[in-house]
Each structure stands twice: as structure tokens, then as C-alpha cells.
View 1: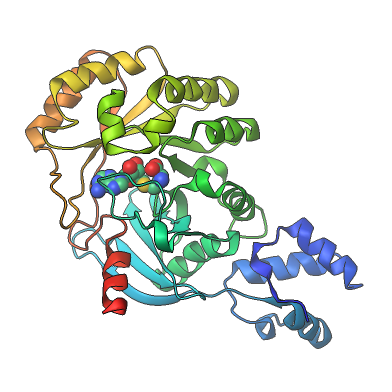
View 2: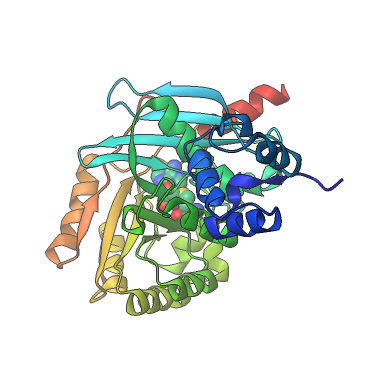
Amino acid sequence: MEEKQSIKSLLPEELEEQMAQMGEPRYRAGQIFRWLHQGVASFSQMSDLSKGLRAKLEQGWYITKPEILRKQVSQRDGTVKYLFGLADGNSIETVVMRYRHGNSACLSTQAGCRMGCVFCASFDPARSRNLTPAEILDELLFAQADSGLKISNLVLMGTGEPLDNYDNVMAFLKLVSRPGGVNIGMRHISLSTCGLVPMIDRLAQEKLQLTLSVSLHAPNDQLRSQLMPVNRKYPLDQLIPACRRYFSQTGRRISFEYAMIDGMTDTIDCARQLNRLLEGFPCHINLIPLNHVEGSPLRPSSREQLERFQEVLLRRGQNVTVRRSLGGDISASCGQLRRQRIKEVSQ
Ligand code: SAH
């Protein structure tokens, strides 16, 4: 017998195709899609389907359901962080952040990242694997159900490089923005990349209304290659033109993420170089105070230095903000819970 397939990864039109093959009416697809996006864990809960159809579905398909391995709630700002266990024993982190304009979920797109940025806790090439569209959707469904917080915005800024898992992330974006399901519009979604140039060009072709964030973190190749190995493959003279192409093709402003690392990326000279790099390009610069990762020699910039750096850019007319840091009391920096878990399990 063939192996069972994950039904939650299917788009409504793909479900319709399956229904046609099973000799079922089309509208069944819509019913199943709604149930799946409500987070039901078994076909038996799909009470408006016939018993016969439920049994047939059971034979060919399974419904993914992550297990909550750990949950942390920030006493300061209500940020909720989950460590979810997946069917194959791997684990991923998901964070729900509360803002005045609504709640936002930060989703992982891979279990363990392959990119190797030196300041990041998510690097884990040995255990890295792509998440399926259903697994990414599950982060949202189960974080929302468990926390009771209605999620209206999504950021693909958890563990993993979304553009390194391109097809599954595109399928997820289609799933999550469809009416009948969770139905979160593209304008409420941000996707963050470390700068995979060919994939930025591919994404531009999709003409989605989402916000593209590019993790820049340094204004010159020497420093950027030191922090982010991806820069050796796609240096700034390829990355920035790709960002310009993206803007001209989609009309969507790019948000550049810039981590403020004490004595490294936060000098006034760096601020001036950053200004020159992005001069005249309609974009947004988001300064992120570095999250300290256990065992790392890298430190966050002081508040004063952060303000001085921002001032240089503001004076030159750049659109620059400082990201508010949430969940400071719950090892908020992404990848840390998963790391702890791997350590515990392998002991
Ligand atoms: N792979 C994607 C998305 C995941 S990381 C990317 O690189 O953009 C989400 C953001 O958090 C990125 O901007 C990443 O560079 C940043 N980040 C990772 N570790 C960090 C840390 N310790 N402090 C501050 N930002 C960090």
C-alpha cells in the first residue's frame, strides 16, 4: 500500500481534484479545507462528511498535529513562545507577539537552518530539514488555539531561511491567504531572507503583496562576509541590485534588518556606509538590538550608540526605526529553546 499523504498541505483546488478522483462532489473540498484550518486532528471530527468518505480519507491521508513540548509566557509583555515537536522527533520554535495593532506570529520555515550566520542560534545543518506547508501552517493554528490569541499578522522570521525552502513556503503562503481557511492577507505577512539573490528574483515574479525583509546587518562585504557566509556567494553588489529589481517589479518597499552588534556593526562609520549603500532607494531600515546568544562573544550595542547610529541615518533622510525587543525574559532569541531541547535529549 502507498504511504499516507499529508492532507493539510493541499490547496482547495488540489482537494477538489482528490474529491473528483474519489467520485465525491466538489464542495466536499471546501468542507475539508475549513475543518483542517480550524485545526481538527482527526477525520472523525469532520462531522458534516459521510462516514464512508471519512473512512476513505483515513486510508490515504493523515492530519499533522504538533506536540507542545514547552511553552514560555513573558511576564513583561505577554509574548508566548512554543517549542513544538514534529512527527519525526525534530522540533521547531514559534513565537506569538502582542502589539497594539494586533497579534503577530513568528513562524519557522525549517527545522534547523543551513545558512550559518555567526550571531544566530538557529544554525544546525546536521538536523536541518524543510518544513512542509502543513507543518508551517500548524505553527499558526496550534499557537493560536493554545494561546487563545487571535493572530492577524505573520512574520516568517523564525528558524530557517524561507527562500531555501521556496516551494513549501509558497504553498504555505497560498494556504494561509485563502478565503475559507485562516485567510490572512499578504499585506499582513512579512518574509525575511538572508539574501539568496536568485530566489529574490524568483519571488519578485510572483508579485505578492507581502513585505520582503532583507537581513543586511553590515554595510560592506568584508564585515558582512564575516557575519553571514551567504555574503561570500551573493555579495552586496549582487544583493542590492536584486533588491532594486524586487522593488521595481512589485512596487513594495523592502525592509532592511540591521543587527546592532557592539563595536562591530554599530560604528558611526558603518552608519555612513549604510547610508551610502541605500541612498535614494525607497526602503525602510529596521535596527535590531542584538539578542545575546549563550556562549557568543558578540554583545548588543548600548542604547546610546544605537541612538547615535540612528541619528546619522535620520539626518540623511533615511526611514529608520528601532525594533522593540519583546519577550526579553524568556530566552526570546530564536533557536535557543530548540538548542536546549537537543542538549537535554542527547544527554
Ligand atoms: N533566514 C531568514 C529569517 C530568519 S532570522 C533571515 O536571515 O532573514 C530572522 C531575523 O533575525 C534575521 O534578520 C536574522 O538575521 C535575525 N537574527 C538572528 N539571530 C539574531 C540575534 N541573535 N539577534 C538579533 N537578530 C538576530
